[in-house]
Length: 289
Length: 184
Image (cartoon, rainbow over all chains, first blue to last red; front, top):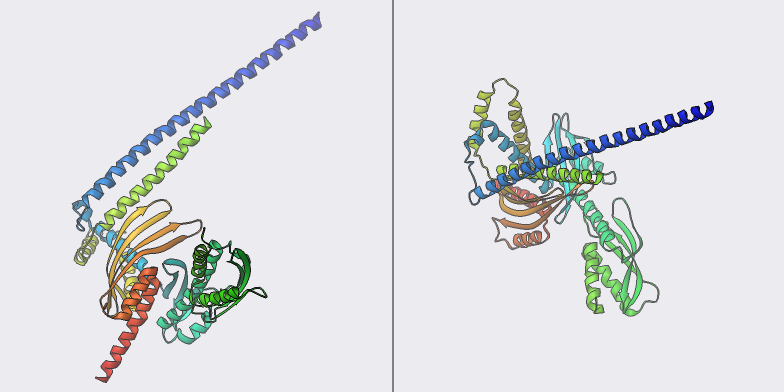
């Protein structure tokens, strides 16, 4: 009887514990849900604030743009003419002009001990990497630091021109860098846009003046693998000096002609442009796209 | 619940970005539609010095002087002088900015006027810049070689080549002029 009592007391305690645990869980869940709801409410209020701010700004910009139609020139708002605002305007304008110098190919900044020049490179309208040279001018002009790649003959060029004619030095260096950037751009464009015509990998050296690759030429609905080797002997030029196009052995006569025509084309035209002309020529020859 | 919190976070982020771009647009418009002459600049510097005698905002004057020194040096060194530069931001989103530029200037004795669009795009690691709609007017435009050069440059958007070639051609012209003077 005693045992039975103890058992049922234990049972009651266990039951109570279980009820307590359940209540605790429910309370925790309730708190969590309330916290989430509060958080959501705060965030929604923030969204409203931001929406209001955004709408005000939009209206401000619209008014500004309407007011500017036609007239270039003087600020009508007298508060804007504070000396500080004028100076800040001038500073911003000069910075914009200095940025234009970047587009001309040579820009720079005076430093405590000399000048830091920046040579920009481009292929047609696309600007590519730029390279900096930190020059010291006393006791003599010398290069303190630079970001010119190691395969560009910087030391040779510096030895020849740096002491006597800095402009010439920068000009020759710019020729080298622009030609290198142009060659690299052509190879990159080829890999990016014409990879379906290239068999295997395009082999190139770091200076990008030696390119070897295989590409497919289709003639009368058959494809033939051509191999091409391009050597850019003039480091200041982005067109090759030597082109060897080889077709498979025992080619039909027309194919040999095509190889000769391609060889000539590669000598005169940028690589990716040459391939672009192949695609359009193919389409017109085969008829249906 | 989590889903709706996520959505709200996204909306907050997009609104904050929109606000940032609108504020920048306002600043750009303000800057691009303003013009102060050199006299006004000089007057402002003087009144600025009076206002803030001895206090720290002389950093503005120092920054202005440093930038002007850089510009003056580059102009003398390259021979390229920009006499006017108008810029208008035509499009500005998170990754893309398109600006229309109108530039006039001279390279030694050769005067030019340019208009172009500059597209800047932010990709993963870097910013790319591309020139389109390039239009060039040279003062000495009657020269047939010059006009051939100009049209080929315009066609390919070759702004960089234009300046480099202009620079060496202008220097050669200067050189020739000096040589002839020597013999007069």
